[in-house]
Amino acid sequence: MHSRIQLIENIKPSLKKLANPCQLCMHKCSVERAKDEGFCRAASKVAVYSYSPHHGEEPPLSGIKGSGTIFFTHCNMKCVYCQNYTFSQEADFEEIEIEELAERMLELQHQGCHNINLVSPTHYASQIVEAIQIAIKKSLNIPIVYNTGGYDNIELIKLLDGIIDIYLVDMRYSMDAMALKYSSAGHYAANNRLIIKEMFQQVGILKLNREGVAEKGVIVRLLILPNSISGTIDTLKFLKEGVSEDIFLSVMSQYHPTYKAEEYLEIARRINKKEYKEVIDEVEKLGFTNGWLQGFITETDRFLGTNIRPKSLDKH
Image: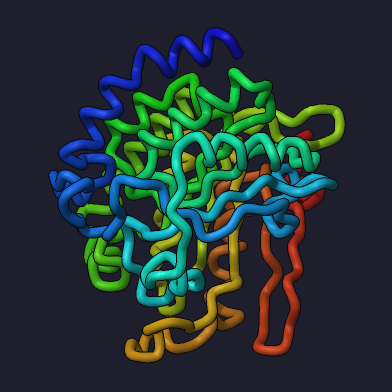
């Protein structure tokens, strides 16, 4: 942990330079957030919606005692179907100092959480890293999870090498036109794939301890959208050919139209069984064996998750 403290000290100047004027995400607004708002509308002070043990993440993150989730307000994507729109795209938050953020990390550790799970952290990366440094000096010693929509500046991800233990990252689209239309995220696909490669190079395949709790590695989340808008099959092919078929996947069927989704006919419904089966069949066809498949969900179903590993395609 002492080496991480020094590493943070070394990269803080570069991180602050990237944050002001802001270039942290691919919008590259170049605003001085103490004076103005960029695309995400975040100011210079950290805005937090909530923090608590969370039991709804992937099994190795939630474990028994929960993932220490910190939900940050604002977002560098504007998904028209965002399930967290009340705090990611509308004003419902508490602004706190960096020292207070560090104390909340320590509090979550004290509650027994298996990790610190930073949800939508990109636009506060500089302040978060400072808070991590303060918290480590005060005994923080659980893994740090960087939970992102995958629209980060590659230069930011490179700076986080050695600081982040687990990357929990979305690969939301394989087509830029779809990313721009539904999430206002231009040039998403190529950059998203670039940062996935960088993340995997840094921390590799997910490693679990004896209790099955994640310690280090990458988990890629794939949310299946109606009408192949997410391009999930193309993303799976990229992961096999460009990263590793051993990477851990979290394939999610939970999409439901919320926020502004009803304004777009093509996404104003849940996915159907055919769309679900096409993706699951491709996962098996390409030989992925690590991760989790969310079961097909109807309007009345509750969440049903299945582990990829026990299936017949298990190599081990």
